[in-house]
Image (cartoon, rainbow, N blue to C red; front, side):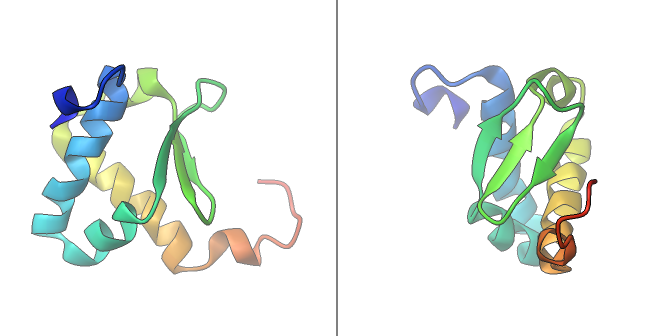
Length: 93
Protein backbone atom coordinates (compact mmCIF):
# COMPACT_ATOMS: atom_id res chain seq x y z
CA UNK A 1 0.00 0.00 0.00
CA UNK A 2 2.65 2.49 0.99
CA UNK A 3 4.18 2.46 -2.49
CA UNK A 4 0.94 3.77 -3.98
CA UNK A 5 1.35 7.29 -2.57
CA UNK A 6 4.00 9.42 -4.23
CA UNK A 7 6.69 11.00 -2.06
CA UNK A 8 5.48 9.16 1.02
CA UNK A 9 8.12 8.57 3.66
CA UNK A 10 8.77 5.01 4.80
CA UNK A 11 7.49 5.86 8.30
CA UNK A 12 4.25 7.31 6.97
CA UNK A 13 3.81 4.26 4.75
CA UNK A 14 4.30 1.89 7.68
CA UNK A 15 1.68 3.70 9.77
CA UNK A 16 -0.70 3.91 6.82
CA UNK A 17 -0.33 0.14 6.30
CA UNK A 18 -0.74 -0.65 10.01
CA UNK A 19 -4.17 0.96 10.23
CA UNK A 20 -6.01 -1.56 8.00
CA UNK A 21 -4.20 -4.38 9.82
CA UNK A 22 -5.48 -2.94 13.10
CA UNK A 23 -8.95 -2.67 11.60
CA UNK A 24 -8.96 -6.42 10.94
CA UNK A 25 -7.79 -7.46 14.40
CA UNK A 26 -9.25 -4.68 16.58
CA UNK A 27 -12.07 -2.96 14.65
CA UNK A 28 -12.89 -0.41 17.36
CA UNK A 29 -9.38 1.04 17.33
CA UNK A 30 -9.01 0.63 13.57
CA UNK A 31 -12.15 2.58 12.72
CA UNK A 32 -11.19 5.45 15.02
CA UNK A 33 -7.64 5.53 13.63
CA UNK A 34 -8.90 5.93 10.07
CA UNK A 35 -10.46 9.26 11.04
CA UNK A 36 -7.06 10.76 11.92
CA UNK A 37 -4.67 12.49 9.55
CA UNK A 38 -1.13 11.10 9.86
CA UNK A 39 1.42 13.89 10.36
CA UNK A 40 5.19 13.49 10.63
CA UNK A 41 6.70 15.58 13.42
CA UNK A 42 10.38 15.12 14.27
CA UNK A 43 10.06 17.57 17.16
CA UNK A 44 8.22 15.04 19.35
CA UNK A 45 9.80 11.98 20.92
CA UNK A 46 7.25 9.33 20.01
CA UNK A 47 3.66 10.11 18.99
CA UNK A 48 0.60 12.03 20.05
CA UNK A 49 -2.93 12.92 19.02
CA UNK A 50 -5.31 15.81 18.95
CA UNK A 51 -8.89 15.77 17.71
CA UNK A 52 -7.91 15.42 14.04
CA UNK A 53 -4.27 14.26 13.79
CA UNK A 54 -1.98 11.47 14.86
CA UNK A 55 1.47 13.10 14.95
CA UNK A 56 4.53 10.86 15.02
CA UNK A 57 8.30 10.97 15.03
CA UNK A 58 9.39 9.08 11.89
CA UNK A 59 12.59 7.76 13.51
CA UNK A 60 10.57 6.32 16.39
CA UNK A 61 8.07 4.68 14.03
CA UNK A 62 10.84 3.08 11.98
CA UNK A 63 12.17 1.34 15.10
CA UNK A 64 8.87 -0.43 15.84
CA UNK A 65 7.62 -3.82 14.69
CA UNK A 66 4.24 -4.07 12.97
CA UNK A 67 2.67 -5.37 16.19
CA UNK A 68 4.16 -2.43 18.11
CA UNK A 69 2.83 0.01 15.49
CA UNK A 70 -0.65 -1.41 15.93
CA UNK A 71 -0.26 -1.01 19.69
CA UNK A 72 0.94 2.58 19.28
CA UNK A 73 -2.05 3.46 17.13
CA UNK A 74 -4.44 1.80 19.58
CA UNK A 75 -2.82 3.63 22.49
CA UNK A 76 -3.11 7.01 20.80
CA UNK A 77 -6.71 6.37 19.73
CA UNK A 78 -7.63 5.56 23.33
CA UNK A 79 -6.51 9.05 24.35
CA UNK A 80 -9.27 10.34 22.07
CA UNK A 81 -11.82 7.73 23.11
CA UNK A 82 -11.27 8.75 26.74
CA UNK A 83 -11.45 12.46 25.81
CA UNK A 84 -7.98 13.22 27.16
CA UNK A 85 -7.30 16.19 24.82
CA UNK A 86 -10.67 17.71 25.69
CA UNK A 87 -10.20 17.16 29.44
CA UNK A 88 -6.74 18.72 29.43
CA UNK A 89 -8.28 22.13 30.20
CA UNK A 90 -5.18 24.10 29.26
CA UNK A 91 -2.83 22.10 31.50
CA UNK A 92 0.67 21.28 30.23
CA UNK A 93 1.32 17.67 29.25
